[in-house]
Amino acid sequence: MIVSDSSPLIFIAKLGILPIVCKKYGAICIPEEVFNEVVVEGRKFRAQEIVEIEKAIAEKRIKVIRVEHVSKQEMSGLHIGEQNAIALCKQKKISSLLVDDREAVLTCRLLGISAVRTTRVLLELMKDKLIKRERYEKFLRQLSEEGYFMTAEVYGELLKAGEKVQK
Image (cartoon, rainbow, N blue to C red; front, side, top):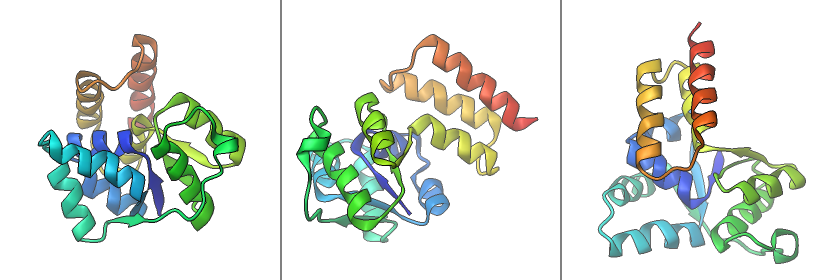
């Protein structure tokens, strides 16, 4: 089981790999605030990926959970969704969080939570032979086209990492 913040959930759904990711992790838990950011706000814009996310919620592959308490003191500077996702990890004793925001990744490290970026999910899917290298590279390009921020250097490192996994 893994907790997710908004952006990884959106990107994973846009790539069309939400069912594979849910299978890999067993289930994805999201706090109500992430649900509101992704699904409620996404409906207003008729975002295509919302259909897949709502389907996964209906099938209980994504679980929406109310967060009991958020300690804003240790998470100042983070958005509300990130704060609640981290708090959900602590509340449910879930050790990993899907998150892409740099500050949230650093906060996770300080709190002993494993931060898993969207790009790492893709690499892990390839390691587990759930996707092939060609799809991995295609997904990296798609992420970039969809607005996922990565420098040319990071993109190159991810391609090299994909080469190593395939060998």
